[in-house]
Structure formats: structure tokens, C-alpha cells
Length: 422
Image (cartoon, rainbow, N blue to C red):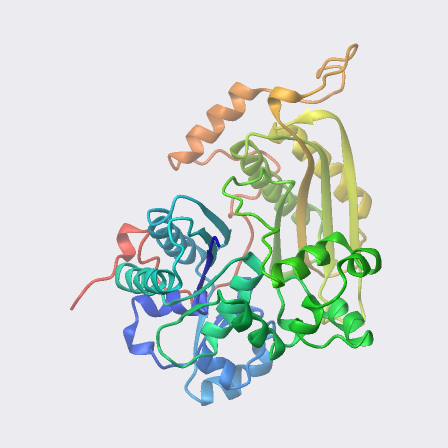
């Protein structure tokens, strides 16, 4: 029986903040979203204090700090770099790896069949990452992806200190599933869990015993795969080829509310320029440009959300055409008299440049679109060497005014912020 492993970094953002701050090993830590708005990550000590995910910082700030908690603004440069270091270690240990998220990866353990060897590999892997990067991880090993999630859940809640759990024998699998609530199963969300509860299905074991044909007919083929995987039948394979993105979103929440159309246009232009850079980096062209703006959800008196799209007559990756579409949409959805708290741009309907179906009769010039690949490449090259090229509609103050008052140093990505010893 082939085995898979799920490597999951423990409380990743909080753990990253501790790598160069060993004095915070037992200290409660929370990490905040952009503009220091909401809690997006918590250490286990902060969770024990009752800090909820997504809670607005101002609601818990006073009580949390009074109990000795530590707070950080998000430092995505640090988190991204440490994630790459962890994934590079894992990539060197196995032939096939699927990077599932910034802090999770599935490994194909095709070279290991014995449960004891798999466990020893998991311990070695965990110790290596801890020694080389400083990030604690837990590892779940099982015959299917869904069961590796179950094994990882057990490893998280087991106090044996290894952080590794291997789930292989069928009788052990069924025993664990009998004690596991259905809401803990990978892919079973709140609504689906409620529907299954109404049918008298409360545990993962009860779900695994359901008739496959009934599950497919009543729910979906996706849940059918989950049931089969709970039984030890692999249905979701390791995907070691990253899929091209289907959309690109660039958005920000604003520290200060914006009511001026001209000011909002400058920020939307910044978002459009950044989205165009990402689009070319992905080697894609888009046919649709969308813009959204909204007031704060905490403003109960003035609520407004605007969203619309501009359909491009042919796929492009020229920032100037993206800017044109974004400005047309913004003029349509903008309403005077509202204090806007968030805005963004979304590029979608992607096409690969090598497979674009062009019009038989119309040219790009006739469609009033600008498309100059050499110009865009030149601008991208100049920007990559810190010679910033701005478009006339942009504001030169940066992507957007983001407030980060408690950000830690970029220990691993900035020469001037490298850790030093006194």
C-alpha cells in the first residue's frame, strides 16, 4: 500500500515571528491583517486565551496586551521566504511533492512501504526542518490525502512530542474515524456537515460506511471521493504541476476613508499596474477587467458595494489597456458621498499567448486597444532593477497607504535588516 504524507507548519505566521525571537517561545502571539485590522494568525497560547480568528484587533487589544500578549503586523516577505526554505527541504527528500499552501505540502512516499520506516522518515523530516529553518511542523502519514489530514489532526492533538502520526492499518483507521466528528473531515464544510447531521451522520466512520451510489446521487462526486478516501482508496492524486492561475486580484483596505473619485482613480491605477505585472509574470493574457469598491462593513449607516466588469474585445497583457478598462468601470460604479474603505481590481478570462484566437477582420488598433509586448517587457525589466516607471494616472506614493505599525524586520530578505548579535 502506497503512503502519502502531509507536512503542516504549526501556527505558521506566529512560528515565523519566533524564529529570530527565541525569547517569545512561550509568549502568546497574534499577527494582524493589512492596516492592522483583524487577527489572521495566532499561536497556541493566544488561542488558549480565547482570541478568535478574524476578530477585529480593537476589540481584543486592551485585554490581550494586559495579559502579556505580543502582536505583530503581517510580514509577508518573511513568511514567504521561510515557506520557500521549508518547501525546498521537502522537495529534496522525495521525488514528488504538491505544495498545497504557504504552510502545507503533500509528499509521495513511494519509496517507503513499511509503517515504521514511514514514521522514522516523518521524525527525520520534522527534525531537519526545525534545525535548518526553525519552523515546527506536524506530519500525518496515511494511504490517502484525506486520511493524511486525519493523521495530521491526531498529530496536532497528541502529546507524545514527536508531532508525527502514521495511520495505515484498516482497523486503526476505523477506530480513529469513530471518534472524529464529521466537521473535522477535509472538504466537509459547515453547510455540508449540517446536511449530513440531518441524515444521522455525525462521525467520520458513519460517513465512510455510507452507500457510494446514495452519496453520489444525494450530494456530489466530490463527496463520493471523500468517502472512498476515508475507506483507504486513493482518489485524489498528488499534483506536482502547478496549475496556471484563473484570475488575479489586487486589493487593499484603506487606513483613511476615501470619498474623492480622483484619489480612488489613482489607487485603482496602482492596482491595475500591479495586476498587469502579475499577468505577464504568469505568461497569460486576460479578456476581462473588473473593479470593486466598498464601504466599511462596520459602518452601519452608509453601506455600499460596487462591482462591474469591462469585456475586452481580445486577450491582452498591456497595462495601458488594463488601465483603460479599469477607469471605465470605476466611473460606472462610483457613487459620491460614500466613505470607501476597500477597493480592488480583478483580471479574469485568461488565455495563453500561444493559443489566442484572433479576429479575422479586426486588428488591435481598430479595437482601440494598446498592445506592445516589447514596451511592457522593457518596463518590467526596468522596474526589476529598482528604477520605478510610473504611469500618468498612478499616485507615486506606492501601491496603497497601508498601516503596519508593528511589523518585524525582514530578517532573511533585506541586507539592512539581517539579524545581528550584540
